[in-house]
Length: 353
Figure 1 (cartoon, rainbow, N blue to C red):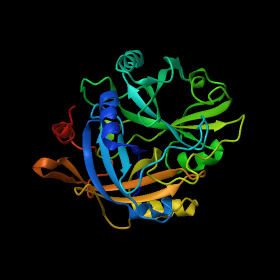
Figure 2: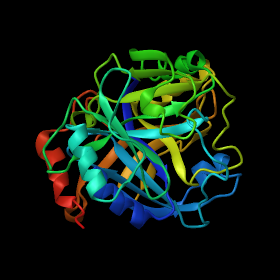
Figure 3: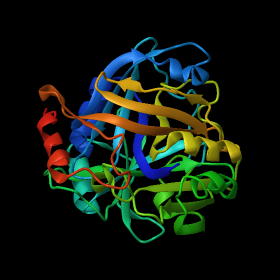
Figure 4: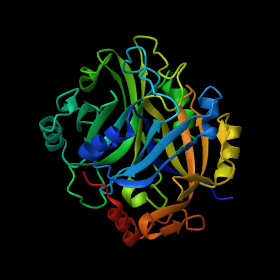
């Protein structure tokens, strides 16, 4: 049976206020195309919510200029909480989401002039690329990085997310999942030391090993033209014992709640994951409706440190929902991108402030 992991589809972000956060993400990251937006109970996540079913508003948003989507998660049955201790770089979690841009310096000036909370000046990554760090209204860290591939020009200063930074206890153990199974097997850099671009972040003056990974296989799936190349950067603290950011907390609290991977052949993939001791922790089994118009099959696995990875096999997505135009992707060639006219039609659903 055919099976494939196409790459990162989205980053899940737990927020204090969906409206406030989405407005900020539109202003600074151009995330203005809603794929779905709905409020519902989340029984699938009971294993991650102390076995109590929560309700939440979930909104999947996209920047059509390029990059992955973001799933903005705002619980409605409880008030989400921030971490109760001071999180430091290298703590165990999805620590940073990376967002791509054509020009880092110009983007830095735009963020600064528009009142974003800056966490650094423009500094250099280990591969020489320019970067800077910024904090969103929830206290979450985003990193602006150079992008190589963009889909269309929307006039916004950035594209969307193209990866994330994950704090782990043992990079070599973590790569048994991220590289060997998820396909992030190509090393962009593997460096150990004290890094200048980390020095203004909490705990960033310590020694780390950091390995930036991408896929050797080209991205696939219907949105491959938009998402393009994506990255996972694993970081390991060497000078101290990191803390688990999600210990005692629940899915939907404030933070980067999961990495969402776009897959085909979920059942066959599940057999491989189970054989490698990364079996599904929860499984929607049948089609799951998201926002009333998107049909998917969702599963979750834990990485070696308990960080959540969501697997999503998409069956039906809205192209122009208000006109009732949808696309059934279940029987499409899994490597074939959606035609340009369909992808570009998404701009008609753009939210403007």
